[in-house]
Length: 200
Image (cartoon, rainbow, N blue to C red):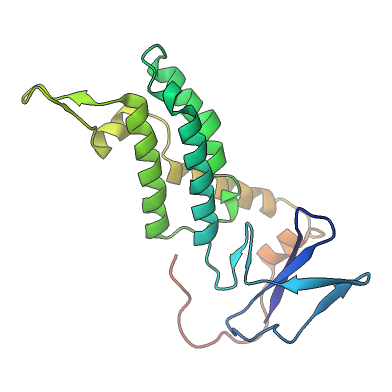
């Protein structure tokens, strides 16, 4: 079964479509037209990943945007005049929304969760600063466990999971007229191919 996801580009006169199928040749000979407008077939689509059901490129793009946002406010995060509470609030309201934008559709793997945690720990280390070791008498970076103890808010992975669950609840409460709800409760026809699905 081949499903086509269609979405407009930023420019109004350009449209693209992506074919999601296990068959790599599916849709290559098909062209879509609507009101004398043709749709270009692409291998990846923003917020939908690639035709291989992979969201890694989207997460990489979100992390890149998060890094740019982090570097624009890193002087504020390392400022000694601001309290830790205010710095955490800036992190939660400025940097985090940039990274998790559109995360309701993400299907995270262990590798992607690790990349997100690394980004969050780097921001928190700049926020809390170094720690003076009482035994050695030297300054050192905070360990991940120490960062988690100081940062009482949920981690970035927990935020992504909770947003996905909240979006699933919204979809479940939608009416039968909504296409998203029909996809959730519908049953696909035909037989599944051999082999197990990719683990998530």
